[in-house]
Image 1 (tube, helix red, strand yellow):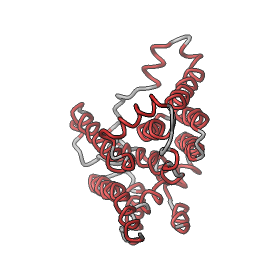
Image 2 (tube, one colour):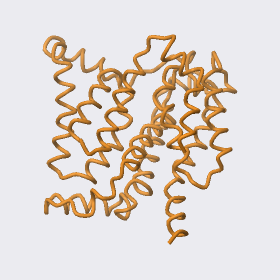
Image 3 (cartoon, helix red, strand yellow):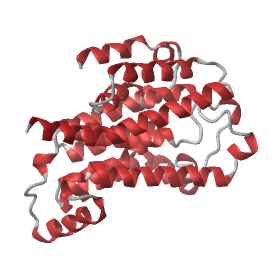
Amino acid sequence: PPWAFAVLCASKRMHSVFVLRMFNDGVAMALAYCAVALYQRRRWTLGSIVLSLGISVKMNVLLMMPGLLVLLVGGTSVGKSMQALGALVATQIVLGAPFLLTYPKEYVSRAFELGRVFSHKWTVNFKFVPEDVFVSGAFAKYLLLGHLFVLLALAHQKWCRHYGGFFFAFVRNFFKRALSGNLDGVQDTYTPAHVALVLFESNFVGIVFARSLHYQFYSWYYHTLPLLLWSANRVPVVAKLAILVIIEWCWNVYPSTPTSSGIFVAVHLVALVFVCAGYADKQASKKKSS
């Protein structure tokens, strides 16, 4: 409901990030949201250019890529998919050209430093984990496995449900369309709400399984929370509001404590369960109305 978005104006932490600080996270997410709006209008190539601009500001925008790949493969022709992805990569090359021409290895290794380990001191989400575990490679691998598992589960049970699931009807459908070159039965399923949910859910899963979240990272997903929570129809409004309040409280505990970070992880897992249940609720309501 529209009133749920009014709640977004009440965040103390968001006012701090956007008004009192000089973080680039807000700029990156503004570009990402512009890209989402373009994708909702099926402007895949232009949207990918804008998304790539967001990635050039901050790499967290890459968290939307799994959802974008599903949308491109499922909702466009092979040619359009390649064109959109090519535009995304080309934008990165153009922006990085001054550095690629001078120090290519150094630029690629530092600009896309996927293995970076943040300081345990400033983490908001895993302060309850011992520091030696927090910085270990095994902990990062388990989080990555959880991230991939949930993404595949969402792709199979929710994002590609109208195909018969990601495994393997979606893949078969892609190759069938690639050979025939038609889009029958694809575009009509891509409503603006579906596009936004797929991209925001992909982003949210990355947040849940991130090894370290710092205070400015709240802007990565804060504005998507109402849509994510209200997509689960059978969850009481009181529960949705409680999740928003608890998440806000966790982000305002400074510095974070083992207790606040434990509550943080728990409430995000609950929200993730609500997100995963959203499709089942929608289908149930459709059957009831019919």
